[in-house]
Length: 441
Image (cartoon, rainbow, N blue to C red; front, side, top):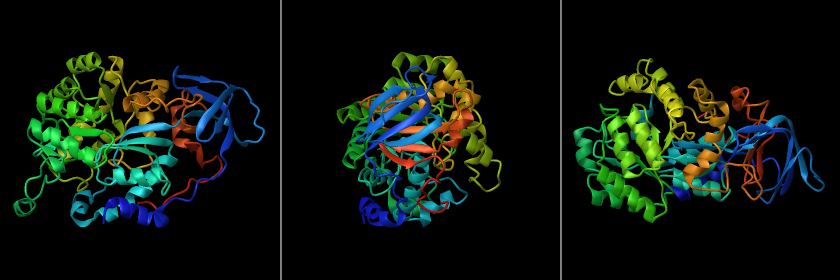
């Protein structure tokens, strides 16, 4: 059964409780408003929402006759947040590596619905899912209103080289490898320029929205190197050029310096993780306009879990200890050096729904709270190449999040989200518990 059919058929059982209100028009009375363009917190504002769009943004109060009024007077309203690096079909646990052989796509589809719901209730109205077979189908189910979740830009399968971070057969024994055969471009594994073009075209055929490559080794893959380069510049260019034919942008997982150089020179839109980012790489990124998505959360999570015996395979454990602990420092250095930074967590490594903790980790790295909030709003929209979200302005999508207090003064407020609106639909209100798709997964 196709995953899209599966997700749709199971949606009644798994879908979250319907959104709170069925009204078409609202007046949100915000105690303060975060202006994503300026990075400033403004005084009281009223936001009028009609038919899923922002219809008016007025200082103070505004005429709310005929509208459903929502009192957010003790809150700061911000544009809905975007996490540019998630994996909604899974979540790290000590059984993750064996689950690959025990779970079916059916199981992953069930789990993904709950993970998507948790992400939305945490204030993330959009995500970029960078690798997973389920995400394009989950995207479609959310877009059709069958399950609740964030707006998804889905990469589908990541593109790797043989033995690379996203080679799906890493760690398989000889018997199983010979039975399955070597993966190729259809599976996201390339070894030439022609393969690179074919892999992108296959992602187009499968309905992806964005292309993800693994430009270096990775922490959690069952392989020794976490940072060796895994593409030539020519292969990266072939991927990027072919992606442009379909209107795709390219995100590059990369930890090592040489792999980052090749990815930037090849024209990728963003570098994900960037652990060993050198001054030379930073200079190249500024020259080429390349974005940096740090994923500090994932680095801290794996470094912490690597201390627990048996949580990761032994081939993974030293990489998690060595690489994971460095990402937060890299993020701080990149910001100070003027690299463009956008928000991403690599959630799926850590527990879905805890995404906002990345804001706190960013500020600990020396990134101002206002800049961190911009990274998940207006800057994330720039990375995605869209202009209808990321700000609270007339005509834009009514994606709005509210937190108590002032998150620029106290960034920990981001962990207390109690209002979520996506496309003008209310999913969470102050004083109510967020809808949950299921028990903890």
